[in-house]
Image (cartoon, rainbow, N blue to C red):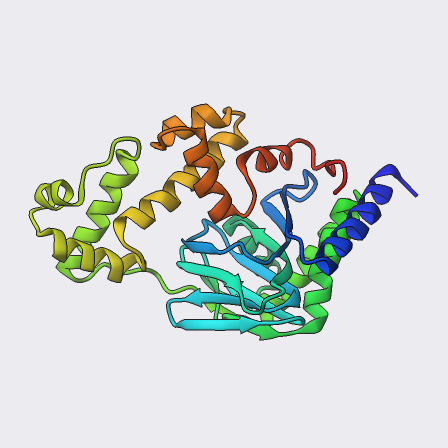
Length: 299
């Protein structure tokens, strides 16, 4: 057995014991042989994800307990054998639905990876989007966990094969053209303009009153339009956007303390708190997950 395989089996044993004891653990990482994909395998009990979005897609196999996912259309409860499907830029929350928490293996494929697989299967036109939030599919759930296992063992051929099989099955069975976001109302136009301002002035954003004055509207009207358009108020969206930009900076090698200041957090602990809540692991663990995909000691 290779060192990577030994590490993977050791990690599975350690994490299994942690779950049995009700302890939380998480690994968010990238396997260099699977470009365009982030991986998260975790067991959460007390951790809750605040409302946030992703640049790419979410394909999550729940392997234990119950996950409650808050989506624009309501809250879903997903248990073992379920696969949760979330499209890009869809605001959502997540938390445990039972006292023992939930365990899952998640794939975060980029838009480019999804488009590539969709083109290969040839059954979708335009930008693909999932038409279901959650499906009961033990077979695909198992394949997703095997993608993680193969990646942890350094088996690139198996990991890539299983990844494409899982994505293709979900696209073929539960996807259609992703509706384009259309800006129609004056409120939606203001919301889009406000988002652009916050994106550009992320480190020194205006207050809600200042932002509304710049756009020629009232604070309450802007708040309502922003929430209706993006599923969250401006300050929540800004925190999410800061964390997403911090991830890009960390991926590029920027130290966490510098990344914190660059995106507008007061200091590194401020970044750590919000980053951990939204990404599921602290910035330091996130950076280690980018360093060659090696398993950390003890899992």
